[in-house]
Length: 183
Image (cartoon, rainbow, N blue to C red; front, top):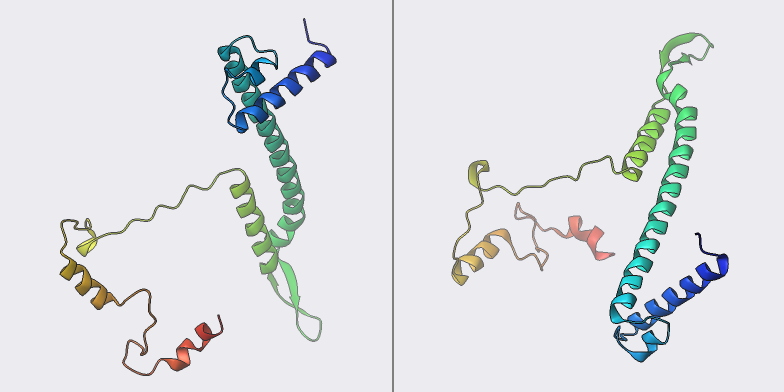
């Protein structure tokens, strides 16, 4: 038999109070939690799990509705931009004569952005993998390293915490570092 609205409201309040007490660090066997109507520690724990799962389910449903609305909006925008991006339009000279037919590159860019947004929204893009390789494209050699070797590497590569005073070619680098001085 389905629960009445009053019973559902009572359960919701009890669960909200349970979550509030647990967030405050109150143990499941504390009298404050028992005063909510839980007979045992296990009952309180199980009800907390149910409350959290219900919240997760509601959030997932809301996210699904949001995703659907966004997909519908993207569909409308894509429907409007697609013909402009795929159908060549006449190009006129100064006299008004048609000299060529070209697609609208701005519309193509818009379509690509819409498609990219859809892929992100729906998780279609695979994560990009980055891999560091050693000499000749092989594995990076790793082993015990002495402090002197690390210092030599830093000396060779340059200290990442300091900006160089000269450009790699040995010339004064003030002209190229002007952009960084304003930051």
